Image 1: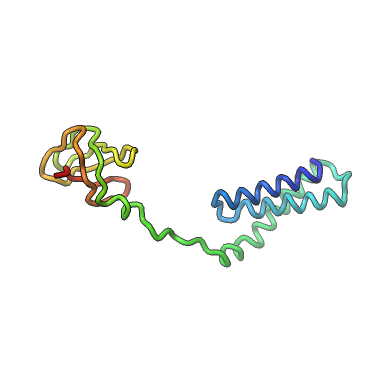
Image 2 (image 1 turned 90 degrees about the vertical axis):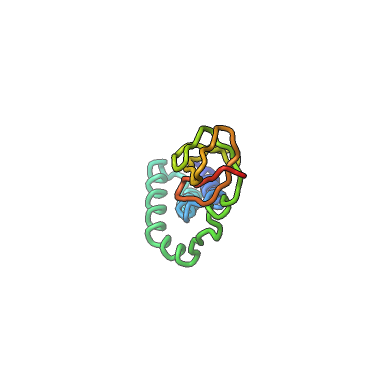
Length: 145
């Protein structure tokens, strides 16, 4: 690969890290590609197999040596908003009949969800429901009054 190919690959990998949170895995691959690009400028006759071997060595070594330090310097922060906090109180629509205490499907925010009827009344298909709480990926709902 020509030197400029390695530079483009490195830039794409670094940009990808900014767009997709990969927890610093792509940073070191991108830096390794840039390093191989510099080596290719200094040694233009380096065979492609040697360039790829250097890329692998640089990527693995830099990840092994520096990723832990970078992660401790930039710790990932847990989200302050829990999904279940944003769903409680929302209204949806039953996609199938739900007997009291039974499981079924409801539509909420345009997506189907597993739901359990927490009310004492049956819910007919198409009726509006209100989310009381979330248990894992299951919505606990009641018929909307």
